[in-house]
Amino acid sequence: MLKKIRSTLSSIAQNWKMTQRRYPTLPLEVGGFFLLAAAVVGVPVAIFLNWPTAILVALPIGLLAGTFWFSRRAMRAAYGQIEGQPGAAAAVIGSFRGGWVVTPGVAVNKQQDVISRVVGKPGVILVSEGPSSRVTHLLANERKKTARWLPDIPIYEIQVGNEEGQVTLLQLQRSLTRLPRNLRGGEITQVRRRLEAVSQHANPLPVPKGPMPTSPRQMRRQRT
Image (cartoon, one colour):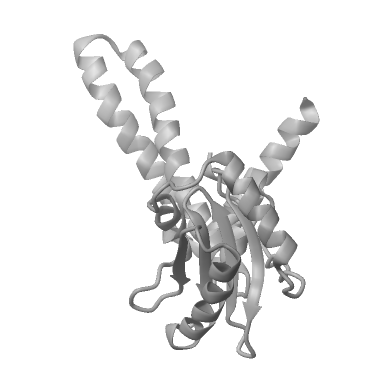
């Protein structure tokens, strides 16, 4: 139990340092959210009831607000560390809950533009990383291959990047969750197994290294 507590505190400290390097005003921001939330809740309680009750109520609310803001900043900082690296989108999707099955690097060109394949409730999602002018052709080719293997399964395309019509890493989860739900659990497994059986692509690209947590558990710990 003590080891787990130490590990958690150490992880929080590391995330704080990483985030503060990107956002130097982080202590002021977190402190401001804490005080604002505590005041908004505590002052009315103090007026209508009493100060001891107000303090008991305001402190956890303030901590929750400060933690919420820190988690958002930490996630932005973590994404910023790997943005632009081949396979960054696959690493991010791998941390999402919801049963997304990610195969990084199903297609790569000389410029290191990457197509990763995601299987989930919507069907098959092809996620590209790179300029739209280069990845459009890659996506079209991969879509033809996938449709030949799975003619009855919906196929979607998402371009990750900063150009018009693309989504950033921070917007990626929202884009995935907004897709329609077309498959059930058993169907997802069948699609995944069929793709594994027929795919003859090269070994997947490695998950980007660096301050970005590399396991779903670490990523979820940052969010909470």
